[in-house]
Length: 574
Image (cartoon, rainbow, N blue to C red; front, side, top):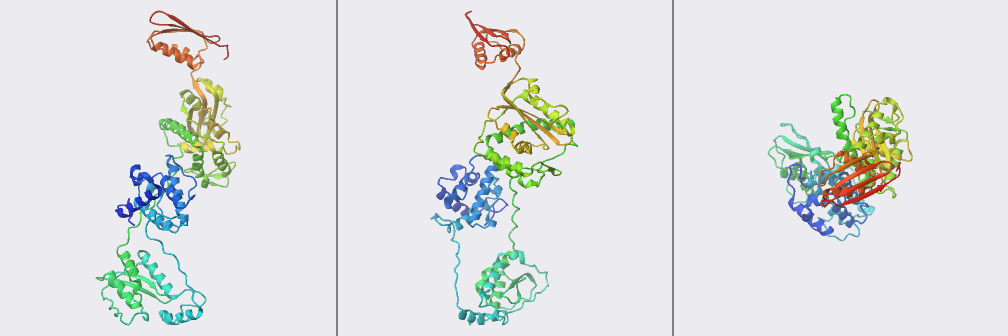
């Protein structure tokens, strides 16, 4: 089967019949879903195909669009059909389909599945391709075997080949040797140098019919291709192709000489493969690297480059956190790819210059995976970036960075509430998670999830808490632990309330200035704030008299001069 994607034409007939077969089993038109490649690309229809052929072959199918989960669908499909009997050499790699690298390989896999499916118990079709041959065993008594041994011994110069104890039968052995040579001729072929003749021992041909013509003499021209063969357990022979000779001529001459005309086609195939070897298949594209090796150190970076990297990293960390929050079970699959990076208590993250010691080894990672797959863990909403929390998070990261070897304690113990209060007012709930060692988003979130040494997985539980709706991210190089990152979380965040008495005004239809908005945002009621803004937009002028310890009085004057008062009271400390 030609492999499209490597400069080889895709077999249109095979492509068409394969698409029709998939549509007949799974229903619906692939063309209506964007065509063969697009319709199969996420693996959902392929998993449905194999589950129809053998129910339950793929237990769990992902129907979203996250790349590594989609690739997992394709890997599950391949694993299922391999278990059904599709040869490993016939399997496409997930990038062949997901990235459109080799649709010919995908068609080849499905054609192979079509043949294997015909032998699956309970599957009535429709079928694709020719049915695979089934083994037919025959049993001979000792008398028959002895007679056969006498007849076949001449194949090896009188040496007995067929043995009565059920060992190899000479004719079967010869057929296997020739078939093997035909299928792997390009691997065993030896291209001879011009003028280098080969010696070809001959075996007496006892099985040829009387009317079989004698073999033609070997040409005197130089041998250009020679393939070693063995008949039974006899001496090694050579299938030779001479200069100016066709593969058909050479195969006929050999078959007539050695009485194996039924193997002529296999012999021709071996010679043709040796003359025009099939192009070596392109190296299989590696499976998607979930954990890519990244640049690790920052020693050669300028301060400006470090600042630029920090600014670029913060939104990416938040996006990775949101990926975890949106699909905890799916993220567990991503974390599972880190298991091979542990050896005992040593952990070597992808790209790390050296391994580092951990408290628990892989046990902490496995506990995090189990937690994320637990029935109690549900997807939660995405976090949004709050600028004030960003500043508080950067203070936390700096506290770790400037602590040298003191880790997360810093020069002085840090109080998250006091630090956040410097920049604004948080609401409902406040928390913070931190990570060291890694400077890329996936690695940072992995460290937060693993919680090495903390069996309660506090950081992981915090980052998945549904009350948190906003966050800030701070990061930067660490002098002894490579990198430091802090993610500060809150239920809400805004400017701090005005702490003094203040009177402000906004004219009808005007734009509230910052002084007016500071007072309005200090009122602890969102509905009140929105009503005042709506009245201004509707043509009223507004007068606010604010007392942080008592409340706020609002006077609204419309275009006709009518005055409406709104009052809200609270006690000091609310």
